[in-house]
Image 1 (cartoon, rainbow, N blue to C red):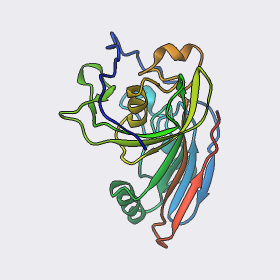
Image 2: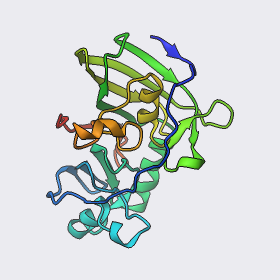
Image 3: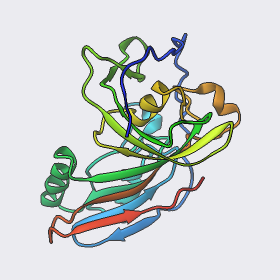
Length: 232
């Protein structure tokens, strides 16, 4: 396992962050599991988890879910452009329990991503602190001075000369962590409007998917896990 430290990312400073054109998909809810305490959903790409601040960004996963399951409570979020497994609570007690699963890093997640270029070696770890890039929000950046610790493992699944499919395991939950960590290696996630806008000409969505989520059940304490197959 290799650990990568800051290496002058060679990133070009963006002249302008493009406006966020919100056009949520009109797709039915995909509920993977539900019981008295939790609801697990396969979130589509392009849909906010919670409402945005602007008036035209009220359509979101939690509002759609509450139209069918009135008691759904937010526990964590996925980026708008990320698809995959996300869990909601059905009671305040379950919400608090699940929140601790994430806060104490007991929850385990894996993601599938497709990266630009051939990533070598076949596995490794990115250990780089991240913080907000205040001049270019909502971008995040590697920040050795003021950043918060962030750690991501990667495992190559398959690759060609032009792209690599990887499984990513985050050990922390920083904003845009996987996107910035892969960018720091010189292999941005394909279809990323913020960090690799040049790839959006050929990829109509961010190629990042929350594949699995495992944690303890708030009622029984048993370990449970859920999977949503990657759409790409």
